[in-house]
Length: 302
Image 1: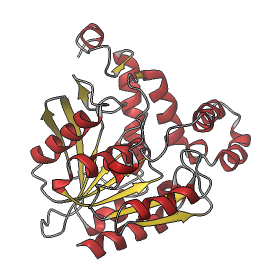
Image 2: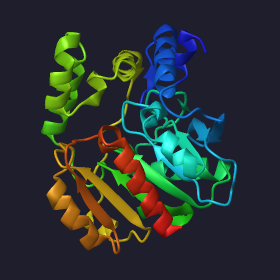
Image 3: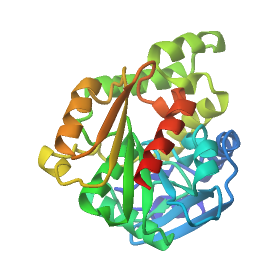
Image 4: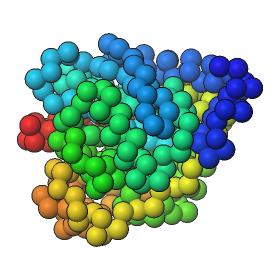
């Protein structure tokens, strides 16, 4: 795809790469992060009404166990799951989806940020993959996508796991301040990064491959969507899919204590936990523990 094609063929309300050179540098950085996790056994492109969705497949080919589907956070791609793919794929088939509209290898043609369109896109993706019953796992913006799916199109869902998700509260100023502070901190001298990482609850700063990927993603890709609105209490109350909510104690996206009490009240049978020693990235900061908890929850569902 040429730079001219990249700029002219994509609608202004969907994301795009700034140019081919930055895109290719970003993909190389992503591949360095993928190499830190499990090796994908396959990559496939799935056609939907909204564009081409790129999917990574991990783990055993055995179809007897319900597969896991991973949906990443905003401004990232499926490489962010590198701490989780080895443990999850050792137990179950795993599919990691690059969300169209975020930097990754998917190619969007239509916007999917509206709730019904987002649910249709994910349902079409799962259908094209031949997946009728999945454990859906979403982090941050991917958590909003997973919540939205459980509300609007739950038919293919065996369970939903939400890792410090969007969709529960309106995204506040404190979260955006943290995002920008974390980005600026990636330019700090190497000696200062561990201290800044601890202060900001930001492991990106001390994992060089991840730091490079995030910095290049910001330069290379132009996201063109608004922050999603949270689901209302009435909408949350419709959810009947088994749900597991994991919140970082120092999360700046949500108020953890408020949500750990609120969600089980609204969603029958929901399990909600707060993890200490982390903020917005429990699956990165405490990967072994979160992997164990997720697999235990999925086993309890089937």
